[in-house]
Image 1 (cartoon, rainbow, N blue to C red):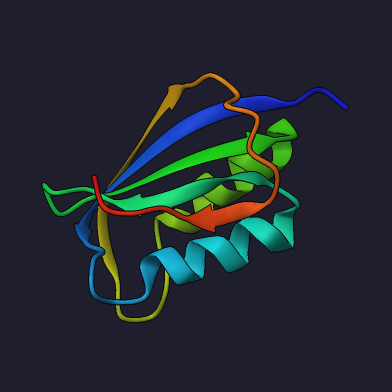
Image 2: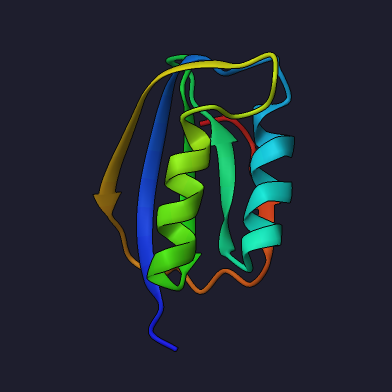
Length: 93
């Protein structure tokens, strides 16, 4: 298995709607490692680590997110694997 890491930034109405909780569940379903956190600018940041197909699937799912969210943009950038095991919520940065 070849692991890749990607940083996802989701903008729109994505805080206060259970987005991080949803991301943890979705990433777990896909077998990804990493984390999700709110950003002070109102976006959500996700570090997704795992097989390329699973990272791609999470990125696509992030465009919708949980029912109350309204994502307007999902940006992706390469990232370094930080050694995360499992997927967790992190404090706001």
